[in-house]
Length: 518
Image (cartoon, rainbow, N blue to C red; front, side):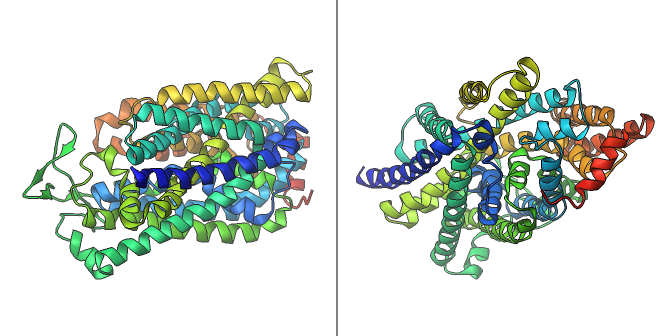
């Protein structure tokens, strides 16, 4: 009991610091919707880099990804990590600078729907509406995954009911985002990025030490069929979803195959980066496009260290606690289990703040972008164009609360697997926005009709593949992001070539954006 109190004290202290950041930026956030939603394009390179990565990775980095490694071994987790790292680097390299310049040139767009609509000089805001609706749908799911993370964390730590802990955590995130807006979110994301990587490093190093060294880590798990293979996968023997234990050891079946199609499927996680609003918005918010080179280096290094550490923690955890977590959902608590067993309570609480940091840094981004999609793009852009800035700010906060309630309802199931919830929303954003974002930035011939067709096709295909085709198995079992992304690209090219080319004004602006330094 005393240990739980010390953990709670450490985490309350952390949350107090986060709230303090929100209060510090509250005045600036209330000055205008531009400040509230994008911080007046004033982020420095470090805030941009760690803010983008921390808001992107979310709680699945410390719970979902180690959970996958603990449950089925190296292959599924490491190929996903490789895909994410490559996607991170390419997104920073090719998209960041062009988007920062083009979004400023295209009517000083401060949201992704704004940019896409302005890019094609829309009069009827069809692109804006479609983009905003997809953001509302997928960010509700994304926010739900964060609330699941908080619920699992607190219920595991304190033995309290999952639903009570999930709602309490969600209310804290909503309060914090409500008062501080984008600047508070970005500042805390920077701090949380630091906390996350320190927490991962500390648990990893201690885990290796407790295991007796790297060779001992390998020795502990090498007997599990497929556990350390790049082209195989471990298969826990389950009865009603629970792994069976015999003579004090968890049971596994024969090694499963991990073929080329599966590798392509997991690597395709990297495609999602090109359509992630929370990452793209950080690109748009940096104070100077030329500083993105430094941000790219910082962000890529952070990402590489964090992903490798997360996968390794899951592997180490299976060796140290082979039968402690016997369901796929429970396996996502391996980071929590290792932290509480490794450290005295007050330090465990500080390390545990890493999970809270990951969750807050993502959920505040998701809620804020979803709120802006409705308030700025639908309410102000379509429903009430004469709305004042204060009205837009009010509607932003009202929408934030509404989306939070929806996300809490989705998160009520305590058996939700964080990795699966995140993977669906990730696919949704990647396929809806990724292809059209790339074509909008790098192909002058892309048309408004193609943008509409590509977004609807990409977003719709995620649902079709996930719900109708994937259950058939075999070749259809591939991660829905890959086919949806490819089909969206094909549709964009075909429709662009079949429709009338963009106006001279649009094409001239495209050329200016290549070197624009505003």
